[in-house]
Length: 146
Image (cartoon, rainbow, N blue to C red; front, top):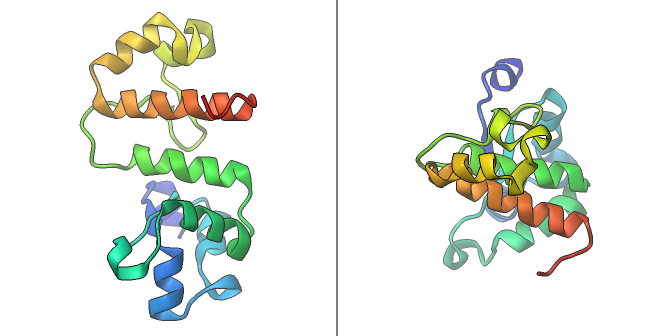
């Protein structure tokens, strides 16, 4: 676990599938242990035809079954893009602390600033990450849905 945290080895967690297929849920599920050690985690799900689940339900289950708070849900959403198989550079200079690259820093104008727009126009991954950050900011400011 320490090595996974140090080397930023992300783990996908399928809460519904783990419960239905493996019978692992609640305190028996290793999610809390991964989080305690700082292992990057993202929620995922099997195909709806397999488990009758979808991502919204996985997030609800994370809160209700695992006691995950909003900050952890946000980190999981960020991890899902940081570790996705999408081309291009990341918006994160340090994904462990969610420190943006200089072009997207507050000093450079943040997510809506021209340096960040230029940075993200050449990277599909960075563009998705920037979009997520803009949506998270709108949600957190009470401006959701747009």
